[in-house]
Image (cartoon, rainbow, N blue to C red; front, side):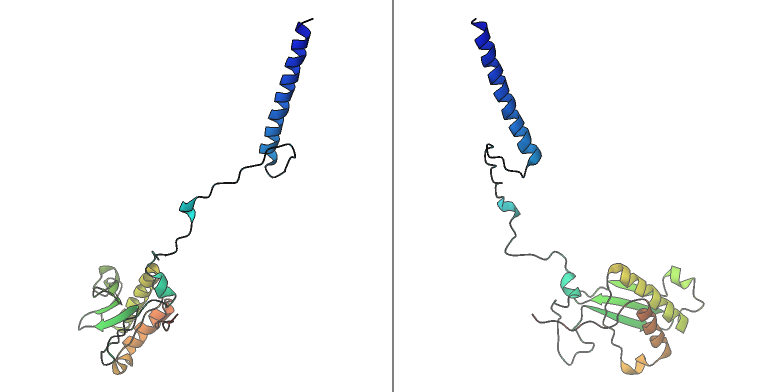
Amino acid sequence: MYNRPQQSLLNVLTSTAIQQRSRICMLTVCQGSQNINSPAVPKPEENHNEDISKTFVNRNPRNLEQMALAVKDRGWNTVWPIKEYYHRLVFRRSQHHISAEVYSRDSVVPVLTCSTQEWALKKELSSTRSVSACRAVGEVLAQRCLEAGITRIVYREVPWTFRTESVQTFWTAMKEGGVVLSEPRRKFI
């Protein structure tokens, strides 16, 4: 007689354990549903490492240039060429060769260059000083500018040299290559 009540008590304990396990499984499966008999789900802890910093440091140095918000050095009004630019294009014709260079506002060393002295360009040209050489230099420099991410450049030439056919051809080759030869006005916020 004594064994039977123990077995029934054991059956009751195992059935309650199974019910508790089923409640836990129901909580993990349903996740969003609320059961009246289930315990309250604890709130997630706040992690202060994921807060947004009050002082933001821009790590892309060209981002402000592309939005026309970066500061341009003005220089003096009597200085030629003007100093108010992000990138400046310089086109030179010597006695034997043609070269074009792109300068940043911060450096004296050119960012990009192209010249008829380069062997890859020189072997394709019949003359390193002709109008077709100016066009070739313009096309190659435009491609290099786009690969470097420079899409807008200041190009100011002295008016009496700008009228020559070779400079006009270089200018059109740069524009056809996808480079805009003027920069946007600086926005003051």
